[in-house]
Image (cartoon, rainbow, N blue to C red):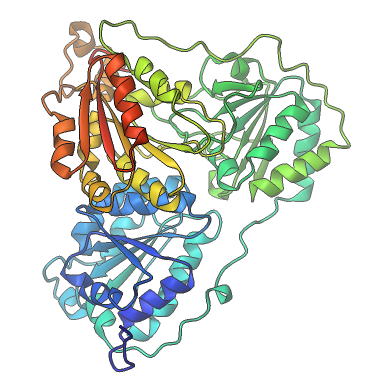
Length: 546
């Protein structure tokens, strides 16, 4: 049904602007302030409004979608201050991933805001300030289109990241006659080429290094530069590791390549022995605890590149710092190396990969469970990891042959993975998406199961259930006082929930397994289905991770 000029409101303008930017999906947990938008959406059958029962799911779906949508932003529409508060963990995840997420926030009418009425505290957008690249509340109906265009522009321009736009209900309900500016008039060129002189200096240092170590960061995958990184490693004879596992966001180097040596970590022989370390497209560093990350050797040269210049030298200085698009950077580095003879004596004849960790137990272990999952992973499989203490084992056991085979978040917000997996599936319907989550994480994001069932999204949820907040116990063990000596860990035990049965209640077929044979069958059945399924894997509560 077409809308008449008399019926056209600012909410229709919002939909026009989104459509002009290629946005076909909006993820929302609405309230009363979203009535103008929801009503206008009935006039746009080309827009898919994804209803979610919680704001965290709306934001994480937008984040997962944006990571795989080829530059199209993910859009989440939240309800006033209370909805924004529920979604902030997801906004933080998008910030760390440079994920172009646009958070539209329905606000009470301006007259209600001025009197601090219901869900109308002052300066709602201040809550998102630590996480958003840009934030603004529209002040006039005539400016809604311009404000939204600006939000989309900032979100999608490198280094990219979440933005916030507050939309008062009274503005969206008013008549509007604005003509939407074509998106090509607003899009910014964001593939900035790093400084040529700095690239030449980096190439000279790389060529002179005898034991160069390349650290593959998320920007390499985000900019589509994984093939160039492989060529650089082969050209130099360099060893390659992924970022530290607590900073890891997405796979950027094939783990079956002979140059691959695991993850950057304290005590890793490649880190210890390197005379040059090039942190390419990652953070240097994203520290978890004091002393949790070892810098390179004192006499090692350091090259650091990142799309966001704020990251350069943030925690550890660099001899050469480069900012810009990593496909351009690595292409230019390869070209500059043509005039330099490499002096490396790497890779060594023996593998520098740390041995796979095992956990002896009478119960099904995380390692065994992930080894079974690994047999089902092919080039069309995407693993969305949100398993906290089991992520390290996942990164070790799951093959990562193609870019973005594994995606995760380093934000620490439990519940991210279930919604993000749905967003990835929406963006990549041709892929098989597997959400690997811990039992604690699932309970933060369990509402995403309703969306999976309602929309028949064929995501397989693998829940590693150790009936614990194992990260809490691991922290107490590192603290090494009363709790560690007595092996009594307050804040650890969350046993009792039958998560497979909970999934059934949401409409997702669930099965609980205790042994490897049952797991093999459950995974095979789940991955062959075109509906969502949940496999709850009961693992050892004593396994607190590395």
